[in-house]
Image 1 (cartoon, rainbow, N blue to C red):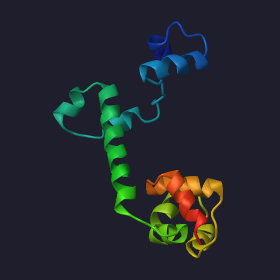
Image 2 (image 1 turned 180 degrees about the vertical axis):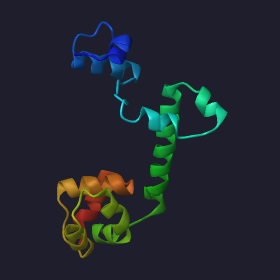
Image 3 (image 1 turned 120 degrees about the horizontal axis):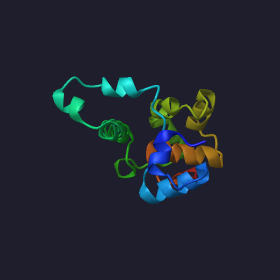
Image 4 (image 1 turned 180 degrees about the horizontal axis):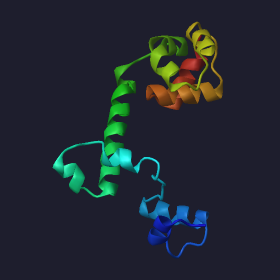
Length: 141
């Protein structure tokens, strides 16, 4: 069953997959914000915030958070690593915060254990590195 907001944007769609297809074409996605609407509205106290449409407020908050996260990710051009162990050891904090690789496993990788394919992908994602580059590092001992 489509909610009112989804019907407004995607009135001709009859199913969720149809909505997703239409949304992807428009770069729009229906999301429920019932539980956080008041928090979004109350994020700022200035007059301009109170005059903005809710969709603009959400976009502003998303952009601010994405920029904040991007600023935390080291770029490949800023770092050259000799091994995965070195990359992991120098970025233990960021990798631990990502919380997708167990701390004991991170410690083992920092000491030279060979990463799995999934770990290579996760390391590349967190460190902002090309996955192929991390694979090359993993092949080195």
